[in-house]
Length: 131
Ligand code: ZN
View 1 (cartoon, rainbow, N blue to C red):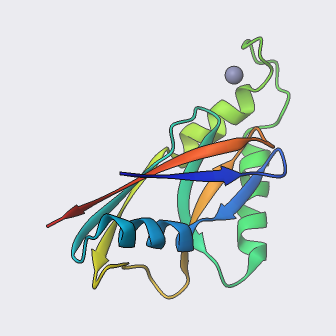
View 2 (cartoon, protein in one colour):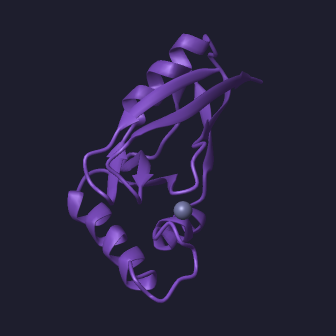
């Protein structure tokens, strides 16, 4: 298993980690199989979306902000319930096929680490499993 460190700069941010995950798959030495990406945090997650137009991730973040406003009378005393809810909405893991030692993604797909309570230094675990 490989561990990535993902430094985030803002409270809410999508970081394209596709190249780092590909490097981790290479380090695992798996030519064909699946890659499991897991984010071990409760206020961050991981998702796949378009990497061609940066407005797409901005729009997705705006949708999450409208769905889950920062302050809405939450009970959790830490004051970051919106981040916990957004993390649950995007989820904490992904499985991507691997062929010829690389992630098999669609032309416009990228893997995004989703920060909802940054800036922080985050971790992301990558396990490639041979078929
Ligand atoms: Zn909390």
